[in-house]
Length: 457
Image 1: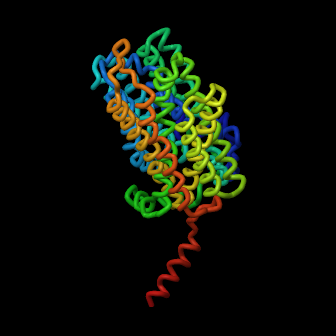
Image 2: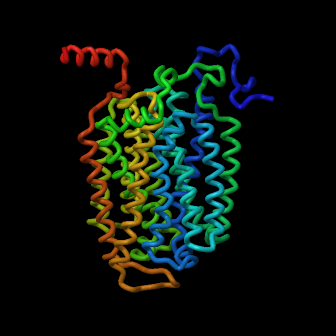
Image 3: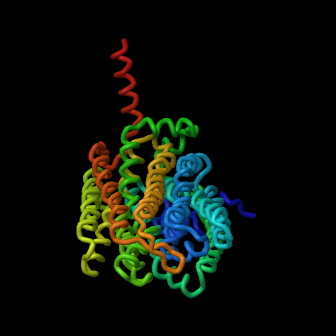
């Protein structure tokens, strides 16, 4: 019987040691694990097309709905640092397989919930389990792809994830209308369980497990950092925190609007059908999906991180400002604006490559978890806050058991989307350029240590 860690003879040349892995094999290995991120993003934004059903089934208002949706983000964010530490310590394959099994259980629990607390428990379990997906993808990418392609590969993971968000738009809206939200969720639980089996069977943490040389930095292969040491190195770096806040503030408006409040806003304020409204929010997610790989590849190509990230953040903040100041745009202009907002938000993917380059190579999973914690954590806070502001400005209107909010209430709430995007610009502006190279270098560290010793003597 073949050991899970042994190479599959038909797929790897036993004499290939020292040769880098074939590009198709690298993409297939990485892509299968990235499909868990697809599932995670689908679950992340699914409530946006089930707002009326969830409010009606659980007899809840906007604040409670915001909390139900946001619990996914809270648990996801809380698991980011543990996910990074686990990915560094035991490898992406094992972590991702267990996560997919747990996610399937959480989705099934949510789908069959007969009370708000059970639905919240199920959704929280989903968030906590799929939390490992993006971090595991970044960790795996560092072993299967060269360092100067890291932003490109990570950007493609954002594309894959956002395709899950697209599936949670019009297709899920139609499935909910035709079969009910519970049946749709149960079907997605079954798919996730199949994915767990596929990841375990195929994915390997390093090309050496298939007989090839690794792209990983030697320090990542030879220096086994303890979890505490990894975390200490990451949090001690100034740029980690700048990138932490920048990523969270640029992502939160998109995940808040397209992930929950955009559809009800377009339905209640602009009178659109739910499926038509979902097309608009899907446009934003498609822009987000495309922006990640394009802006990541641009950053890799020009050999810069700060400039393209800052440019994207500026465009993003400008987009939300236009959204607030011109709410009655024609449909074509609104589509274009949402696409630009989503595309520019994809610039956050540069921040993940950026953060990897400012810390120790052996802490790549940990720094990814720290930065990604803000992306989901800030979105969780913003989703709940928007619901609270809406309830504070509610005029008392109810249709079929669901609260209806007017344009003034939404405008008061959405001011925070523009403020968040503007804050991201400030944090990116204070980062220090890496020129797409790892700052960690043993020679530089030795010279720095020698210089410190000379100053002390």
